Length: 164
Image (cartoon, rainbow, N blue to C red; front, top):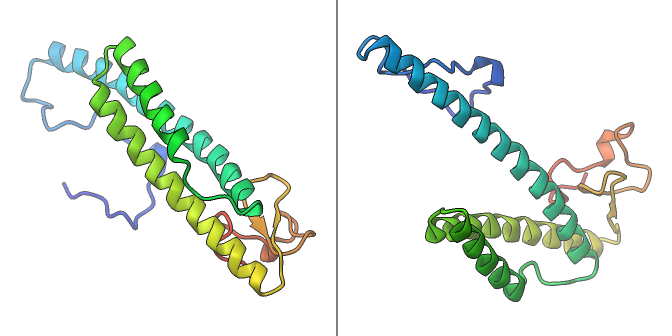
């Protein structure tokens, strides 16, 4: 069985919850219990993905706000406070605080990268005289105030790094 390439689009419906290299190699009752537990894990994974998507939508709005007001992409004091808070939450949840910190550091680095891209886009476009405005949904920059889903050619698709 080959692994799908990253370029290949897979839908949620393509997922086989029973996929396992253990099928036929272990007692069917054990396999059934394993699949039941894995089903719960799959639900947690889906929830995490949707939560991260919502979190990144909010951080994109923060990035747009920071770009509008020429604020730096990173906020070291906020990041330190968040890491300390997450470590405490991890301890209370009996999760390895070092793992929680690594996870949050990864998210923070991605957020800062997005904020830098938004800021650079905002600066570049402002230098051309075309000042981007926030889209109606607050999720990206648009080159023209009339840009909307009805006028997709004027909108960005990546939080403001490519204006047309």
